[in-house]
Length: 79
Image (cartoon, rainbow, N blue to C red):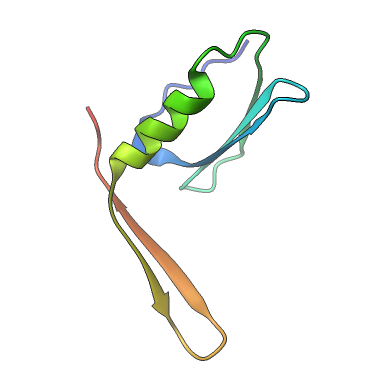
């Protein structure tokens, strides 16, 4: 198993698949996504969501022009 020691505020998103027991985590800095296969996930999917949401200070969608938007998210380090 590979361990990733990265703070919660660097997680962009997590995608849980109960079908195959995999958790895919993407990062805000564009680093290659991490994929974990969990035989007993427990509360990890819910905890991931809670911690990532707790790091969000402000989230705004900005209209760049008539057809394009950008999403800006300000996060805090929970440590």
